[in-house]
Length: 205
Image 1: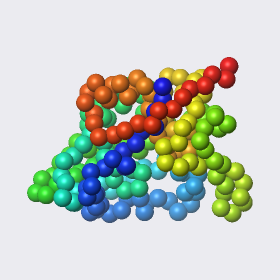
Image 2 (image 1 turned 180 degrees about the vertical axis):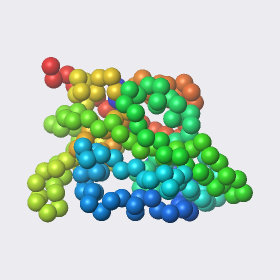
Image 3 (image 1 turned 30 degrees about the vertical axis):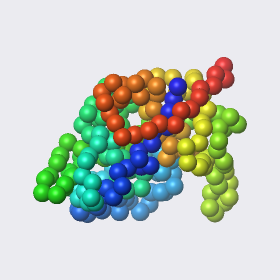
Image 4 (image 1 turned 90 degrees about the vertical axis):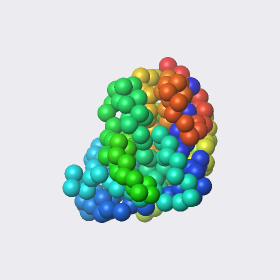
């Protein structure tokens, strides 16, 4: 059974990541349509130039316990090398793991990664059986995707998600979902501090 991967809602209170090097996100080419980019368009996924890597964060707050999965800014995710290894072993489509350097008090920690998601599926969601709404383009008001509240119930097409272990529907790119197989692997290797919201699968064949 597929499940939404939730990290940001279980972050340790007071734990925050403050970027201390140049903001690589501001280096995106100006002619890229940001909205298309955000839903994984065929135009490609923006990756910062090597000169802006690794991304450096100072970890601030009263709590300094780090976990294998953590939320940084916005919806961005920072993964440990263990999580990277598991995903690369299981997921057939290559994702992007941008190197991250964490400054924790007087220590500098490498082997952390900014997870740049890459597996966007078309027509994977059964809209009529999911807790979703249509979203509209701010100018044309045409339907251009889906929107959802926190932890919606999602029905997935079994034929579309077959063989995938971590994905998002192109029309709801912010909702990252993992397979039951990947979830069990995370649990077996004691990857903690995350929660999942179970979904369902539907066969339309």
